[in-house]
Length: 115
Image (cartoon, rainbow, N blue to C red; front, side, top):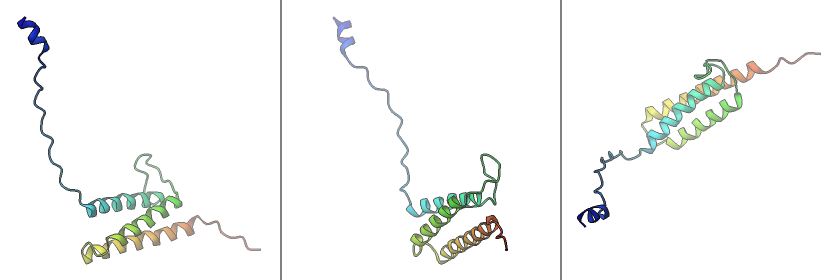
């Protein structure tokens, strides 16, 4: 009978390692990370930086514009939540990207034939 009782008793669970507590999510840090990723994608999509995977220049101005507009929106939402220097830096980034976008758009337009 003692063997029968042992078979019926559940085995004690092995102690589980404690999961480390994650720090609270800082929304502004997440937004900054998104801006950095979008900035990289904008440069790649404008064909000014090689694609990190293919190592080729690939131009997709529609995606570049979407990335730039997204950065501008995030920068607008962050205004007043960061330092004045950070806000100026974000605005300078958006201006620089927009200027390069316009230049790349003009470069891809076909020359108009006169006649």
